[in-house]
Length: 206
Image (cartoon, rainbow, N blue to C red):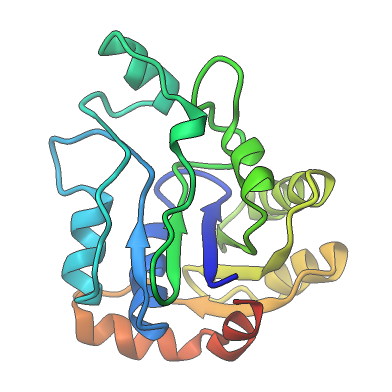
């Protein structure tokens, strides 16, 4: 298995930036199966710009920035989970989900169901701000109940050592480090910021 899944506790927490850093650190390729929202720079475009690594085309691209099942329905279609098999490529592949684990792909399948079917190891990205303990522990419990292999938790934001410790102590998940908010955000600042991430633990999961 040389594939790894990056998911998060919510949307907009920074998992695409984390995915870009991970893709670069692993000399990997990147794949975002479903993209909802095309008006701004897409996640694939962000990762390509920040990682300078190959990016695979999305299986589905929808214009509406919403949950994938709603974006697809707005265009008169439905996402077929069978079409979302992880591509077979040479070398490592970083696969990024959309939003959190309970985001629907269609009216029957959640992203969590897809992750469980894939069987690839999962990294959970979570913010460090207020509310993260509840969201993180719920997400980790859901991954465990679904039989997913969790590599660990990657924190994003300002340092909150006691909060980070609480999440890892209660869940038993590995602390993979913390990616600080980067300003400016460039390939170079991301590379330097990603030095705080435990990339060796991640490599061992591949």
